[in-house]
Length: 274
Image 1: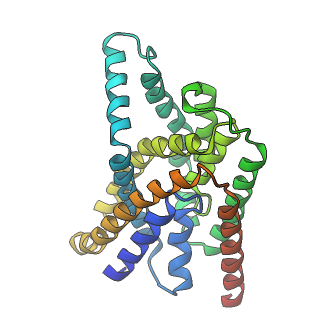
Image 2 (image 1 turned 120 degrees about the horizontal axis):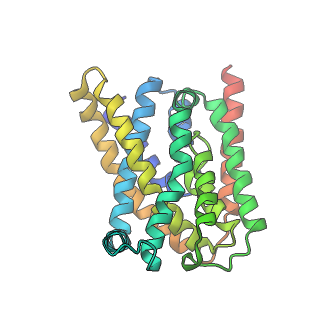
């Protein structure tokens, strides 16, 4: 990977991490369509690192919410009343929602890494994302906000996040779908999806850092990866801001169509190239 590739893929990551179109799919498909030969292990670690970069975007955009949640959780623990306030309860439910994806990631890490090297498998998973987005619009009643969130809702959305560990299944698309199938409004489902990405992205980043430390020529790799990291963080912030406004008055169908078309184009390329 060179610096140009790093920056371009960072921009792609920032645009697609929060839009329900699967950033991981784009990080597999874009190099494939451009005929870039990036080693699978390096691509996987870069993918996780730029996901951490978009986590920075989440922290910047939601910093007030995050501070309030942390304060409420800490105060609740000190007062021995951890669920006394809605904000404290939201904090614990965010952690609960992380459990399914965390367990799935630890159990199937090797299988996930191998999937990152297969554009055809990634393309097929894009059809799954498209289907999930259609289900969200067809099933959800969109009459709830986050104040009514329960532990059952959190676990349900967490299971959807676990599905998104594979490239091609959008994390934001899956978790927004999970929220909307529990009748949450689109912006509320998206807000919870973005906040619940924080623990799992932190964990993924820590695991990736262990693999990153084992890379040969670590200094050179850092010089290449850092520009992509910065690009992903900056563009990711803008993507969050845009999507939350977009979902107030628009459906997810356009994103479903995009995922289906991209999946079809990628599949055609895999058959033509052989």
